Length: 627
Image 1 (cartoon, rainbow, N blue to C red):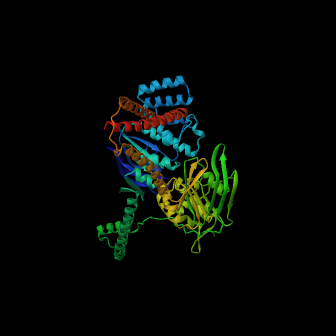
Image 2 (cartoon, rainbow, N blue to C red; image 1 turned 90 degrees about the horizontal axis):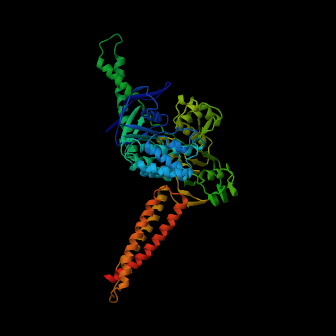
Image 3 (tube, rainbow, N blue to C red; image 1 turned 60 degrees about the vertical axis):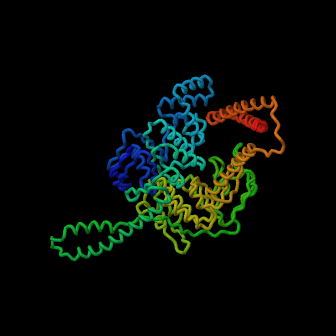
């Protein structure tokens, strides 16, 4: 089924054209990743498709049976309303029943719960209620009566994502899900759950994301928006990189050929007498077409970061018996570590585990409760934080950079002016005189990165550096960090980025426990998977041992009457216990249990498992007598 057709679409803000003459189509089942440089109009294009903005020119046709749902970077809420009211704002009988049930459960009102259960039964809403609970649990959304206005930026993003995933379940089957950077502010476990969720759902998807593992898992084709054209690449991110390189090489060859022809044609044009009007009209027309091609430029700029790093002394940083907690929440419990030259550490863990607090303590921004943090005299921290740019007043980009320094020292000698340095970071001369408030989110992040490096650090601390950066900038940033000679700490949910850069991980496991893992994230996941396999193999092996026939050494005796009776009874008891175990498993998977109920069911589950093991062993002993 045909979902969307776009023809010659264009959009400008003032004199700045974002894109023009765009033409593309989206069909049912497509899962598309949209890639473009920051400021190219990705978010604007998504809003046009969702009907939130209008194009200046061209046509955008959307099938009347298709509903577009947009998840955007800056979600909008009813600020005074609760999380519950915002998530369940969609007016649908089933959704209203679930909302009523969730509210009654939160209030612990037995009468309201009973009424809500009856309505859930009437609407056949239990299956979807289970799905809703899974979404809320996986995105760590609790206390549904909390007003949205009290939430942090990360919490707001997760609530918006939950609302989007719940909404698509209530639309008809023809739904186009449009997502703008959905993985920002999610921890790695949430990202992995979301990619699995989107991969298995039968949806049509248009996605903007910088997370390359996420793109590969969820999408089956990549669209690149460049120079007002959409380039389509089937396959994964690696295929996109290879085919783009081939395209640029081919385009450059075409331009070089056109330049040679242009020089010859220009010479012919100049030789013609000015008064003569019998020139070949077709040749003149052809000349102007060749001129257009010959004057094209391949815009494949890259951020080149050849910075001059401050000297590192013998002492880097040392943490001795560091403790930190907020109330009952333990962040660090006697943490000891000595950093060495050139270390590159990745930090992973669930949101709220204390990752940002740890790097703040290291840099002296926060104080530990006890213990010592000794920093070397030569250490210059470069702190790239989630907070982003902090400016007291709106400045032009060039003014902001010059306030840091007039020039930037290069590793090979010499220096760059502030304007030259900005150009390396893809800021054109026109953009340099734009006000910072007019920049896109990604352009502000790029400017923030520039300002950090301008201070010539030798110990970089990067807290979620990949958020809002485009893939071209990310690729070059990765190449720079691989050559960076100083120390490096990265907090990131971008697994591809972590795998390329870090040598080992600090795994925040909770309750102040920090594990030093010797490898990158992919290796850590392999280890976690391997830990589960031996348990499964051992379990299978133990069953095989139980089922194996023992070597007969003596003639078998016949079972007694009581043993026959016991054998028959054991079969019935094992079957009955197995059914109860399955029922408990199904109940525990429903995700609507309070803590006391979970504890009770877990205790009973263990009790039943032990009984089944004991009875199976006895059944095996007796079964040998009947053979």
